[in-house]
Length: 116
Image 1 (cartoon, rainbow, N blue to C red):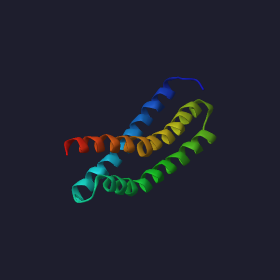
Image 2: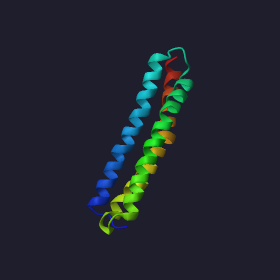
Image 3: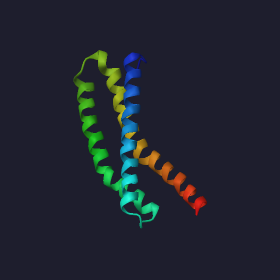
Image 4: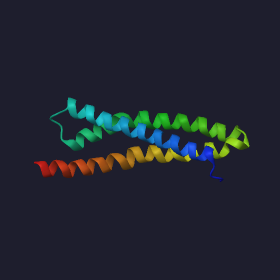
């Protein structure tokens, strides 16, 4: 695959997509923390992640269906852009759910232990 302006635009689009997904998960954790003050932090993160998981996977799946259709039936000039978006949506969804949230949990868990 050739790296051109369309590929770079796709990478920037995917970074924004991933950031938005991560913000949604983190905002739900913040909401759960305010509403459920008696819960331990692990339960808050688990509940918030479970409540956003179906939304995140549904959004990613429907986006992938459209991207795959455009990739398969679109013109040759747009294939590189669509390929970058397909890979990016998969990696972005994975990173929001399986990387960003556990890193945040471990970081805040250590920070909460030090303050107590």
